[in-house]
Length: 186
Image (cartoon, rainbow, N blue to C red; front, side, top):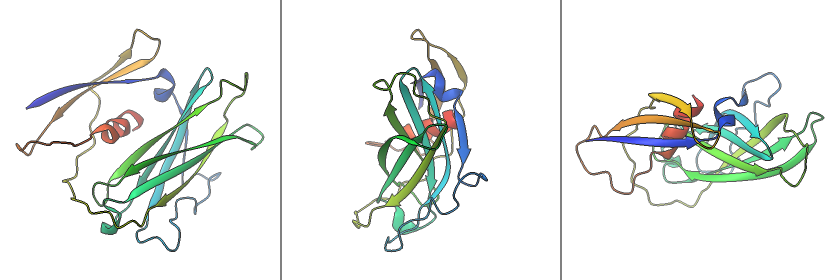
């Protein structure tokens, strides 16, 4: 069964500035999990886009550790000005569905109360829970490339995707939002 999905995204997401965790200006240990965590999680890349007073940071994380499946990953992101000062901090939580998943976490920040403020870069850290959540690992979903990216009626952009369920089984309560966000970012 084919499912056509229409994902709305703001214009700044597709034209976002970005940095990778292995950029020279980045810190190599930012993606390391806390030593007492049951599973290791790695920060793969970060980026952001700003439009008017709103900023969307993006962090891509992964873990090859089977113990990460079902655990909650938290990304905390500092939004920095051109002098390195912290304009604010925000975070996002998602859960890992399979080992090796590239999980995309959008991190929203509202600058509208600080007129004229501009984000120059982001600094992110990542941690993973150790709640021992019961989980059912799902089959990995390959990244999905958009078929089309076009302007929408609100001045932003819209990406169009075609998704196919290759298993033939019902996929109840499954979310593909992270895969779609990754396709837009990637």
